[in-house]
Amino acid sequence: MPGAKNISLQTYLFVNPKNFESNIFKEEKIKYILGEMKAIITGTGSYLPPRVVTNFDLEKIMNTSDEWIRQRTGIVERRYADPGIGSSDLATEAAKRAIESAGLKPADIEFIIAATLSPDHYFPGIGVLVQAKLGLAPIGALDIRNQCSGFIYGLSVADQYIRAGTFRRILLVAAEVQSSNLDYSDAGRDMAVLFGDGAGAVVVEAYDGQDRGILSTHLFADGRYVSDLWMEKPSPRDKPVFRENFIREGRYFPRMEGRSVFKNACEKMPEAVRIALAQNNLRVEDVDVLIPHQANERITQMVAKSLNVPAEKVISNIDRYGNTTAASIPIALDEACRNGKIKSGSLIILTAFGSGYTWASAVIRW
Ligand code: UT7
Image: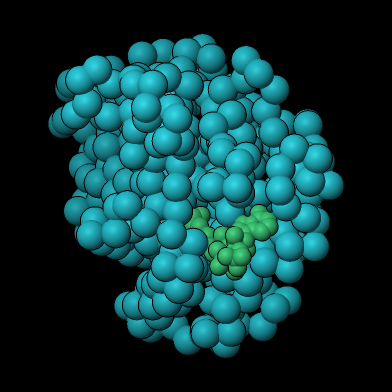
């Protein structure tokens, strides 16, 4: 059947169940069974809302200083979405760019994975909104809730679906609008200066070869530390959910035990990378590009130092965007692709740590 290699097995069989009998299907199926199919990233895209908010802008509305923010975090400015713009809007723009850079049309996408901690609505998640905004057929849309690790968790899901032969072209998008719910009082200033809005996306496709692709993903979680970094309320455990006293106590804002998160981020990201390198029989010297979650420039430097990766191989854009949670890795990945830091054949390591706690790593041969 001509063109059979360009569609997923699911679509192929759905279109004509007789394809079960065809030799092409058997040939493809054998490759999947033998684990010979790889998932590769064929397109990247990002979208940052145009409104720039500098540290000096924050000085005007809260008790902080440009000097404190730069010294403790490396952040100079971040982007804020305008009122009325949700994470699904940023996600849709990033998705369009990723699909275009893959040389595809939106209609080529067979499945959507969307990661965010700041969906437009309490439910549903943004996956279905991205699907509708891209005008796609009723393909599946899965939402991932793993905060800063959300992109790597999503990449892991995409990798499994592709290698299992379920889908051949997956859109993975991560987006956040965090600026609308930060506590700009002294109680929340540690977090308010860190976070920004933005979106990043990739297209993950099946690849019939061994020379490139996602080599591994490793996912971790430790739920004992839930309250170290969380937005406790609103909670359906409360009846009623919304209460005056919770508003007064600032419990609808995200809260963080900054020092504990900092310490664990500096330990767990290098640990996850070491496990990944060992599994792939790779050495730190083999790494061409390290993209850590952009949480804090000091954390990025500690991770690089712990792994002994030289600064020129480490991607950092936190000075311009702050911490964009799930979106930070795909935004950095997109920029590194577009400015030539990532080349064909590069060995890329991704690693993230955040709320949950959750943390993760991925190894990709580009
Ligand atoms: O993406 C998810 C993962 N998140 C992270 O990885 C973030 C991890 N944590 C951090 O990056 C750091 O803990 C922070 C940047 C949040 C805070 O830095 P720190 O060096 O741990 O500062 P601290 O919380 O120990 O606070 C030191 C001082 C305190 O004042 P006192 O008690 O020493 O008088 C804070 O009240 O700095 C004060 N402070 C601020 N001052 C000016 C806290 N936030 C601010 C602020 N501006 N924005």
